Image (cartoon, rainbow, N blue to C red; front, side, top):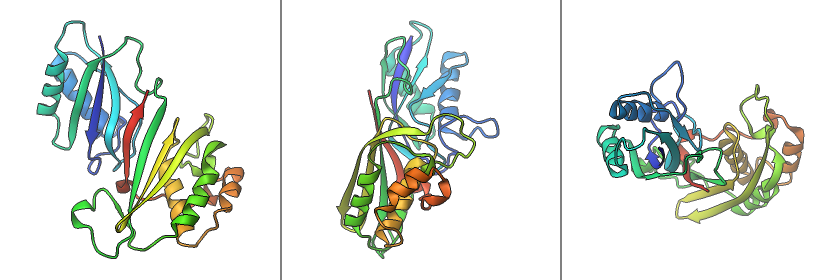
Length: 245
């Protein structure tokens, strides 16, 4: 039986979503450990997005298989929430079609990056927002963001130098929202490269600081060279908001 679940987590103390051979401190690893203990057999969890170390999620989607009739969906959710660490929570568990795959069937992913523009310390939100502490030129950032929307080769916005697969992605929307003492940049796209959202954010911040011109985005895209783009914004400001199917 195939199950779909919606997960939220504070990624601060984890080495990212994806299970790795050199650490057991990953979100996927924690989920598989608890599910395997519950089922009495090894269980593999597939996630929709491989969030980096320190990145958070409000609505990560994953799927896994259990023997038919093994346990009720409500019991799975309650069991996971009981035995998972307090910074990982399961919002929903439901039966899914047998061929459903959380990553391969995803239509869009929505990420949000939070930037504090206030000179005051945001003590209780510090794990979830980039404490930049300066005002930014939002109009220039929006102009630059418009250049990134659409289907492009985003190789300049990827940290994986050894990637052999295509770096062409479709970015459907970038929204910049001004709040009191804070900017939120929301990205909606069909898929994202390694560190792509954080590098786009770092580049847009540099535009907002006046270090770059909006028209440079086209040159960065055409150059297909990571050194042409801006900084990689800190992981703590980034959150996977939801996955759309």
